[in-house]
Amino acid sequence: MNKVLFSTISKKFIMALAGLFLLMFLPVHLAVNLMLLKPDPEPFNKAARFMATFPLIRIMEIVLFAGIVIHITTGLIIQIQNWLARPVGYAGGSKSETSFFSRYMIWTGASIMIFLVLHFFNFYFIRLGLVPGNPDDFYTVAHNLFSIPAYNYIYLSCFLLLGLHLYHAFSSAFQTLGLNHRIWTPVIRIISLIYSIAIPLGFGIISIIIWKFR
Amino acid sequence: MKLTLKIWRQKDARAKGRFVTYELDDVSEKMAFLEMLDSLNRKLVESDQEPVAFDHDCREGICGSCGIYINGHPHGPVPAITTCHLSMRYFNDGDTVWIEPWRAKSFPVIRDLIVDRSAFDKIQAAGGYISVNTGSAPEANSIPIPRKNYDNAFDAAICIGCGACVAACKNASAVLFVSAKITQLALLPQGRVEARDRVRAMVEKMDELGFGNCSNTGACEAECPKEIKIKSIAAMKREYYKAF
Ligand code: FES
Image 1 (tube, rainbow over the protein chains, first blue to last red):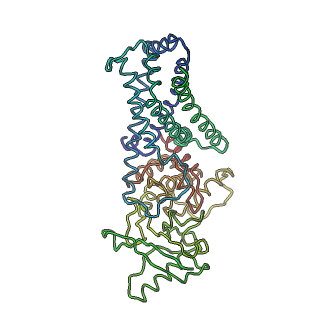
Image 2 (image 1 turned 90 degrees about the vertical axis):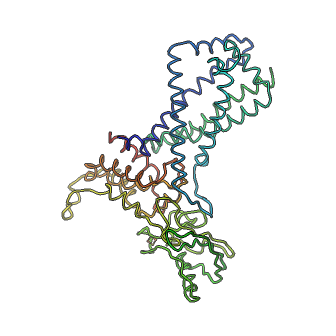
Image 3 (image 1 turned 30 degrees about the vertical axis):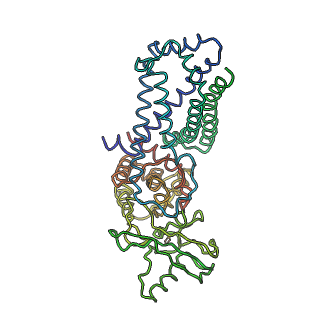
């Protein structure tokens, strides 16, 4: 059974499922962030409180964390095995035509992970009481952070990297699940492109508006 | 034309290899790549040096033994051909050509440009067959096969097991090869019967031999001399999921 659960196909399957689940979470988060643009802090704070207290969402939160942990762990195992599979590289380089960003998934993924840690320090850990701050007013926390230029630079570059990660991730997950179709695969690629531009752009624009115009 | 060749030389599996530079100044564009290597070897032998060892057999693109990594591409920069079909007219006077063996933990170098590809045989032996006595050739129309299955099975069956997919993949993954062998049989009624055991056994063997995982980069598809597509990998995955 172990050989099956940890086979190359199963590992990729698990990573893809966890990844697809994380893909569904991003638009929800983006929708909540849109409320940051309102001059009134109450709607955003209410949404944040709702997220923190509503039981169903608490359960989803655990699932979400599991998703992140599983995605990162399988991704790391896969990457390490991949490095071990070619101990000596090519002096003439590798000039094969490939889906470009697929080569850098571990690096784009690692940068997103570093951002997540930062993100948790700024918000999630405040709620858990691990870091000082007012968990009832994340609106102000966010606005204060976005008024720091350095934070914006980090924030924006992380979303750029997220976009690159998503561009390969989205369509690749379907191939991993065994879906490769004459008509649907090109359609999935287009949706993948739109998604990987729209989501980071959405988050980025919100931060820029607050940074420059508030 | 004049060429500078940077060729990987390695005495045996345990020796430390290195690149050796050779200059050739009378390469004709009418030569095949392997003939160019033959001409180099003739010179080396005449001057009492060890010739460069490389694998080849049919020299007509069907045996799959002539895998050489040339200038960043398995089987050289021209798509859909094997090294033995590569013509020197694709090179220019004054070019430097990097000539290396396949690089993968599962394909150890035996000597110079020759690697041990027996890992593929082991995967094949784990289940890439139909275990019934097929007897003499039956009447072709007695088992109806849908045209689509026939076409797809044939597209997979033309895999010559050269290992270019492993060589091209940044992860040295063998999934394109394994998927071709699995789908070829799974699509036909005679092979269908053992499809479940076959996919499990062959994937398990591939893992055991230390090949990498698939990152869906598509490098294998771009380099396969027989143009096997990654939709075959998706088909193998479906077979694997179905096996439970
Ligand atoms: S020598 Fe047989 S395929 Fe090239």
